[in-house]
Length: 378
Image (cartoon, rainbow, N blue to C red; front, side, top):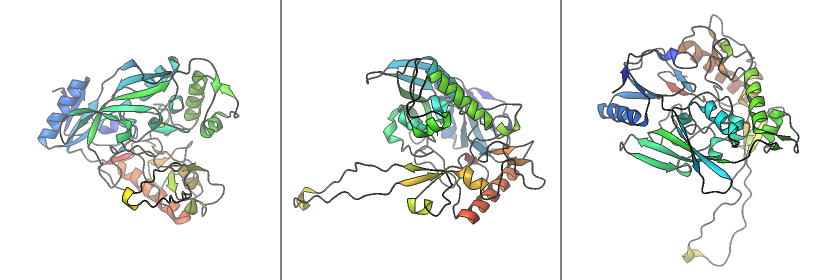
């Protein structure tokens, strides 16, 4: 078993918080990862799987259990059953942005708008990562899983992962446990072959971010570079010299609310429709069928609203800090809580609660944290 001397989690998470675990294992291969997890599960110890540490908020106390670091790497190109597409099977510990760079260089589309998102490939389906209208659910084919309950490895289609807005059956949401306790070993994406030439950019959110018109064309490489530039201006690309990047990315989720609630918010609040199922399946038991099929009902779509806008318009501006706190909002991006210099998890949690309270008081909405919280409460 490849045990190593435990490293403080503050050195392994992008928010730079977290105590030292009792035990730490580095898994460089799939076999090492499977063996390590089976061993930990058999012991009954608390456990935590750590990839890039970019979506974790860890408490100050020592983690009373085992941390397994997923360090597996590799991209395998495979044929797709669909014409004009290619499949990439990627090891869970592979860097996400490195994968995006590889895909773009190969002329493969579908994930270029997610350039610069920190973390590992194995973590991407857990919260269905996305940016500028692209989400991994749109290109994910399947994942290879190791289930805690059985210790068995299985290949699971994306349709069985319950992928939704920043969620899946694998995600440990704040205040709840995952619907399925399992660890991703590899991820398979099915990507369209776009090539290196310019083409029309689909998606209103992406075109708006790139400042393109409906008929403007651009290459994959150009889109990737512009997205990276945009993220850098928001402090959302990791940079050891920039404290604005000492964060877990967007700390609060953009809220998905009913259309009626969205109408209570100021018109200036950015919002995007969450499209309902336009072709629901109606099942009428044959014994009850009298020849009449009811007309379909019109369902008003839910609305996704900007948490960053709500925070700023609740009076919490970029760069805000509570008195004597070393935690603060990014000076570039109101959604990012940052560690401005050896801040404790308690200081960051205090700031998060303050922001939640201000937004609830002003707009009647409780923002939910996006990172996984370990040994810390809001």
